[in-house]
Amino acid sequence: MKKMIKIVLASAVSIFLFTGCGGGNIQTAEDSISGGVELTLQGHTKTETVHDAIVKAGEKNGLTMTEFKSNAIIAERADGDNSASATVTFTNDKIIIRDESGDIDAEDLLEAIQEELQGEEGH
Image 1: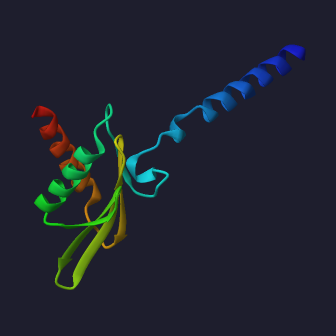
Image 2: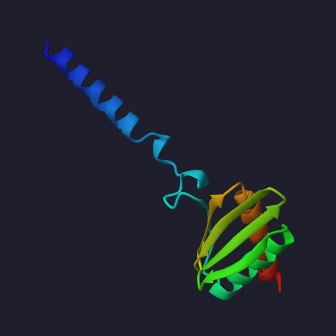
């Protein structure tokens, strides 16, 4: 009887540990705390370089980029009745894009920003 209780207890603890330590805590870009799509930059990049890459990438994607704060830019697209906007906030090691209205294709914009930053590193 004691042996059976030990086995049941060991099984319960094992199940608890496997369930608690599973992959449910993996954070994807869509699940970010900010409610937006995030890009974490490798190493530290100058804030001015990040700013310039965001503006260039947005303009190349057909967006109007408007200065909002020292660490935020408004990205807008107006196609007739369809318009979209997003707020792009940034630091020297992270960029976050939050859709405000419509669909700005935040993931495409982040990819374009990343390409701009890689181009800057090559110069």
